[in-house]
Length: 599
Image (tube, rainbow, N blue to C red; front, side, top):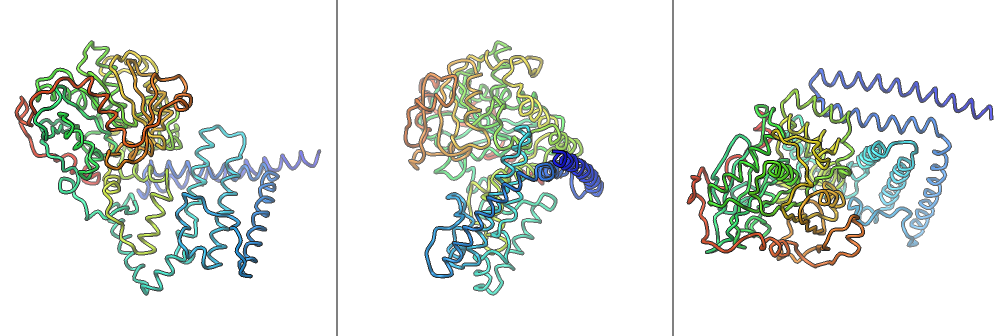
């Protein structure tokens, strides 16, 4: 016992010394990088978070060597299986792999990884090691849930980065292409790397699509319409009708400003906006400005006042209608709920129905992005924003890509730079890389009051434009659409938000994720959606007794909205009302890139 006690004290001393030295080195590195301008505060904050995670792992090794020993025994057993598999292969005997890749892991699907024994053994050894490491981190004890998720995230980033598929010498697909093309793939890959670097010299993001294949207004965001109103934060587009008559009550869409609005207006066949127009809706949409340092002091109140509230007044001026239906997508839905609660306090009722698409109102479980939601990370982001006046949208896009690093970063890395393959032309990925900046004041409020403190669902905890708000007081009927595989706005979190929302609530769950679950036109006959009225206190119980319907949720929503749409009236042409046409859709705000806005 005395020996174990002495060993424990020694381990504690070693762990304490190790932590002190690493912390000193970390602080010195952060200061050095910050002073030289190589790395801004947001990046250094991320570096610090990674260092904290890896330091905790190393400290656990020192304090609990016996747990590592148990993991080593399991690892040895796996390697014995791999040895048996290797011997069988050498003797021409078919045998099940010792470590088969997961069904959704596309890194090792190519035949070259399995045909050639060295690469077969190599990728299986990698899978054994990476799974053992992640299992060890998963089973670490005495760590708060948030810290545990953060460590798992950074452990996964490390194992993903070290995959043999990411390096030329250990990737048989890339080696084969290099041999066949006599190295020209590496030349092409180098050119692609330089081009991607030039696009984002200080915020390197791997190219995901052929940027030359798309142009907003030419083959994206092509639904005909006119800009009929604008202010510092947004332009308002009114779309040209394609039917002789339209619903009396117009439809206003509040899209996210974290991305550009044309996710709802990609190619004509996939355009939600064009479909709405074809169904006899008078459609208006907000096109948010891509902010630079001059808008640093725009806050959540400003986005509410100059966004949906100003847009509602403009819609009334354009159509003569005092009441309308609204749709909010993602953070646009969060803003919509804020505006509805504010209007309720003011005794105003211009909104007849509200539709929320993949929108968080309750942020108690923020999804994958939660690994970055803590006091230390937010302070780092705030320091960067206070210095610049905004959060660079390219940095945020990179952060979101890391939530699915193998699909959204490393796959493009290997295809573009090792194999020399030009990225394919894909409209959704072009939109994904067309990022937007965020004003410092607004984004700081959003991170702290919504994500960190979850105050939006707390009655009268937030004040906007002089009024406290309470989502439970909203009486507007609402339609909540969530996506079952959404990792940004998890469906059970959006369900909690729907429960906090007043009025008659209709909740619908679609298949797929944050984008494909929403942008799912009927012609595709893809995915399913689930309905169940009334809502239940528990999301799992709601789903257990829900009815499944095959195909797109769009027609179901159209049936729901008819009760609030009003009778048919003559179609309205942009410019016929009190608002003059400013310019053709898609307008000028949407054309501004994040880099240009920052200059």
